[in-house]
Length: 191
Image (cartoon, rainbow, N blue to C red):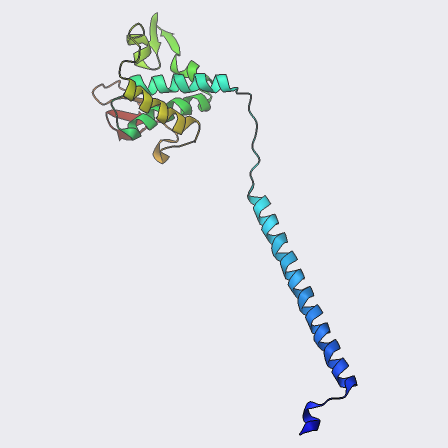
């Protein structure tokens, strides 16, 4: 029995070399696997990184846009539900991005047109109540500002209004021949 467990030193050395060789191969396979995994992780992460285009808008300009948008939301949809406020903000931004209106949000909000010697504002509150257009209900204005930030800075949108450029209150009939998109709160929205 003694001979079964006693191996000569030569075969013991070969077994040690084989064990070391297998250990080295396993380490190399493991390192190669780690390398492959790290490469895959870094490549897939970098593929998902979007490049961010810079703009010429300064912090002061953005603040001015927020105030214009918040005022428009406040006076046009202050008593509307959240979605109604978002919808008014979205129409304002859609107009600025459309090429049919000024590109600047404040110029969209305060735009006036003269038609047959009559001044017409894009948003009625500006022409109708310009002298009285001051914030009275601070909590409603603060909510309007929150909506303006959500829509302008965070890109929050209502999916059904991506093409909306016009709206009016449901208690008036301007006789427009535009495609109706939605009714939210007391406003009807059109393309």
